[in-house]
Length: 135
Image 1 (spheres, rainbow, N blue to C red):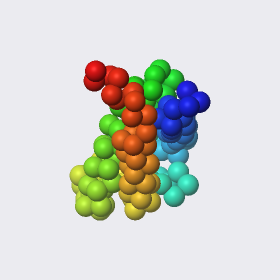
Image 2 (image 1 turned 180 degrees about the vertical axis):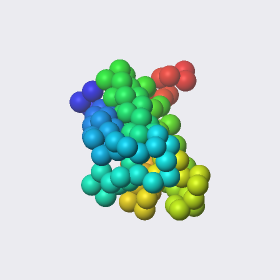
Image 3 (image 1 turned 120 degrees about the vertical axis):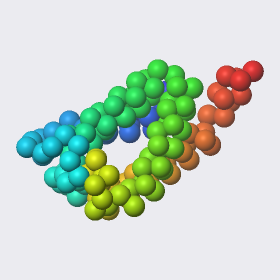
Image 4 (image 1 turned 90 degrees about the vertical axis):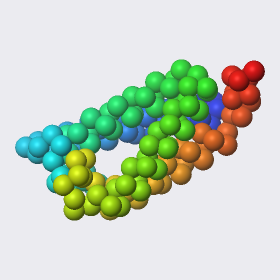
């Protein structure tokens, strides 16, 4: 794991997203599960659904990071792609009834930044793992 950027990133991001998911429940009591308004965790809006998503993504990243380089590379790339989509869609969802995970501007910036890092590492690092997996 020490020599794999994908495993290090997946493990680190996984732990952080799990922590954020857990901490989010401390600020979202009394909110609707998929309400369009959330309470702030620092500057990021969260609701219970958003917290569950953070827990799922954190678990996927952490498990992949602790499993293998190929798993970490795949999950980093997949989560990065999803975050890119969420970051772009989030720009259009603010103030909308479709904003069921209570996104705000800070969330969108964080999701886009996470997408860049996860996709950047997932697509550019540990290339020998990909070649060996295909061969």
